Length: 343
Image (spheres, rainbow, N blue to C red):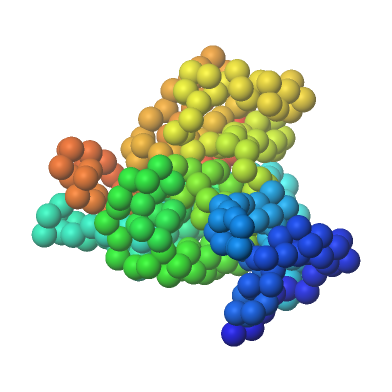
């Protein structure tokens, strides 16, 4: 059967021609059975004189296919009209970080005392975001930071395992979870952009290191034609954002130690560090509240809306409040409010 591939550029066609010449046996076989040779990453080739195990275009092939796909998505991305916002006299930044959602996770009340699945996950998060917006109506919001990633997806492989190959209980196929998470993020951003310009920061995480990055990349392409949204969705594990005298950092929390995060911030955001007075780093991963000042930097772990699965129940890691959290930052005075939407 014929496969459909995004239209290639001149440079990509040149690469493909060289690839065919270099791997003629593979190329001829793919042509014979109707397989796109550019999609082949690993193969065995058995010829008259050789039986060969090889990687086909591993270094360049992925980049070509990915870039072609992203370009194609951008061409068909929805067009969002530019929104003109009302000027504020006393502006505030609202940071919302739905932490550790784990779309695809299965929890049974029969075993753990509570049900949790993909539909409950997305419903809770939408309820949480709407609840936070209702609770901050007394503030003049002129900027919103949305933190995404942080185990948005429960698994990272078709075998229902995390990136580190730990098996998980799931309620849907991995691709269904991906599509549900994509729809959730699109709905959240479309809601937030009606209030103020949105900056999206992505944190890579341990459950979905690969799929989470692809999801963030997809969302940035979806909104590529919107002038009201900006993105920082690189694979960097720590992200930073400046607002007035605030320097705000975010990371998943499974990597660098909390005690090292302030000094990392000072190095990695040196220019903004010197211009800031109030400094915060929001972490995730542990599903419960922790907050501590390390001199001038407050490191705070966020609660999760996620339910308790079999492993957490067996080990006694449960009963922490379930929540989606938000934080209000004043340009001059730093974090002035902490908003919880509890479940």
